[in-house]
Length: 188
Image 1 (cartoon, rainbow, N blue to C red):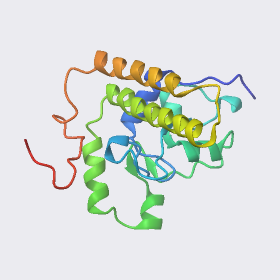
Image 2 (tube, rainbow, N blue to C red; image 1 turned 180 degrees about the vertical axis):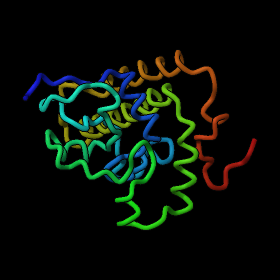
Image 3 (cartoon, one colour; image 1 turned 90 degrees about the vertical axis):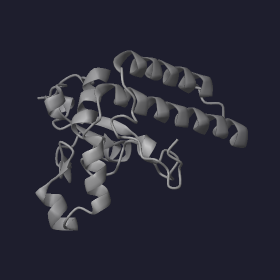
Image 4 (cartoon, rainbow, N blue to C red; image 1 turned 30 degrees about the vertical axis):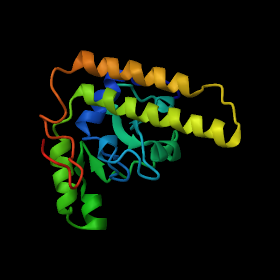
């Protein structure tokens, strides 16, 4: 049975992101951009349908997983690709059989990201949109490409996500311990 494609709402995407501790279910990649937003090949988060809506799956968060955009694009409408290394933000038996025990850094990261809340997804998306804006600006400056969505579009979208973050959050990221201090940073 095929159905019309149904997307997750932004709130549902945020719920999936928080539940899965900002961790790609396919690769284990850290999708919390504050941990290192400018690293080469950074991944942004996507809410992926476990059973694609084209095959009758719902757009309920229980039918979704947090995935890096690369893995989401590879999977497409295929349910055979559901070989998860992480479920609900924790490693699966498959992860352990391939990689062995989690390292101390992974254990610390997953523990820290268990403190994520809905508003953090909006903050993370704002960072991703800002990075897209810079990317589009560079494309224009370096290659004179003029995409139909320029950097101003992405920066306005980022501003809207930051505004949503502020509306939904009444506490700071630092107080919840989900921001890593850079090595050598003072504790002022």
